[in-house]
Length: 158
Image (tube, rainbow, N blue to C red; front, side):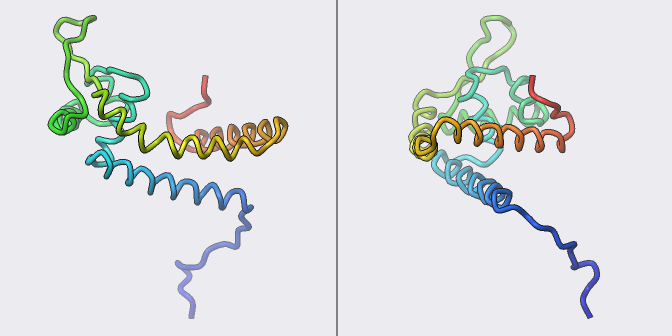
């Protein structure tokens, strides 16, 4: 007799939706690869991504972006400082504060891994005409909105 807890409703998934799931899995695998390249764990990599994306941040701002406590972000910054990925510098706007600054060499290492993947995705898009690119963009924008709609505190983009 089948276990009723293990039965799933029959759901038809569009192939594009299945491919999105595969992209999510590959993204997670790529994140692991990038973390290994930089010798950091996932939380430290998330911090590095924020710093690479937006430049120097205060520890409090970084903690907020990572959704961790300021005590936890201190540990993250300590680890990243120890391996040379970031430094703490005085905050010019707050004489009592500091900014966490990504190391140019670490940013270059991360980009050395990221850019070939990003460029190959751009090459894929180059094979589509403008109308197809618009359709792809509209589809992905709607997927992003659908994801955001299912996350707390992640309303529509402004």
